[in-house]
Length: 549
Image 1 (cartoon, rainbow, N blue to C red):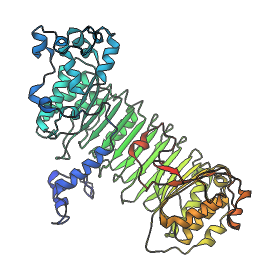
Image 2 (image 1 turned 90 degrees about the vertical axis):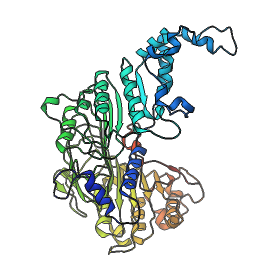
Image 3 (image 1 turned 90 degrees about the horizontal axis):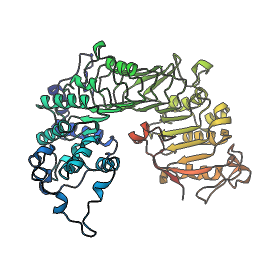
Image 4 (image 1 turned 60 degrees about the horizontal axis):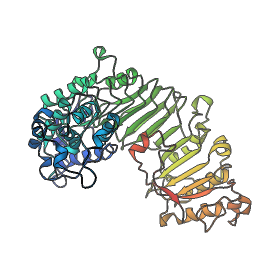
């Protein structure tokens, strides 16, 4: 479904059109609202964990009408009563030792408290009010909701009051539980305050409906932002009047947002420190991702309906992560001299182009159609489809320095492949297999002869292969046995063994494997979104791989 743009490119679909589309899918099954709620739940599940966990609700504390963030409204502070006297220490001399701590340490303590509890420290003394005022504010709407669930308007008011009452700066604001529909003034005031108070980290989601609610242009004034995740908004158009943009922004995620191609291009071109860009569940807008950036290191297309992805000029790009819906599109790599990670490259849906040349199975690979920097590749393949299976040896030549390969084998009931073991046995080696490929992970089951033939080819020609991963499914028993035999290990969890000491059959004995580990690859083709953008992980496609036992 092209939920954000029609087939003729006539602009974003309206709420009524989307609702009509969902309802037209049939009288039985989920309603339009239920379908959108499901999409929203998926989006929320991709977000990073909270900086401070949400506290358990405690009676009336969740009632918005009962709390105040302004110290002048506090009866305790206005009466002159000593709050510590109301709560004497269980042991000790009753001296307030905590308040004697340095301001920096007290500020650190406050920064680790939930939003409401941090604000309530102002009633302790004028000293604590000063510390709270100097502590960067953390606001999370999960801290402001009771056990009975979210209540839209009170939480919107509470979030706005938190930001307005605090003199700044603002460290982090996370809002994912409310709808801003009919709350446009509160939304605009909130963004204006965040811009004025130097917000650093903002996660701002609008509970649908509507899907095309405009995000105020004040978002473009938040120049201090370092991370920005936006969900279910119509992003404002960016023009010359808004430049320069976010000078400190390093990570931006657009989740189910309507955003023009030109605005995405402007973000890439005018955010000088931007390292991570994620387009998530975006339907039709933007229509294409055209990467021209001097700083970008990670680009993610996650279940969106982009028409194409073009890496035009990205000297620092290290990762191009793809999680694709059932929609064909070209993936064009023109200028990415540092690209190290690519996947999942769907050999059915993606048309790979390198240096302006379409990569086809069996083609003569020249230097201009190679990416020597690539070290980790993940592919999705139907081995029973001739052209997809034959693309794999061609990709080895396109990525001559490949070190880790992930293969998601998709099962198919119909077989249109005319090749079998003879095809793989006839193949020669290449630079990738001879000198670089060290790890192969097979996600899914290898059952047909051509699938087993691929595995035999990899192990036979992989002269420096060190680790092989296989899915632990019972349907994969033949592949597991073959891998274990090829590594000369039939009953151990892992080992370093010589192929010359192999107890396997003659095919295993002639394997190019010199030593290695055998792993269970439990990944079913999905991988965590946060892994994809986590640059501390060497391999984002490894999620739950454990040793064979």
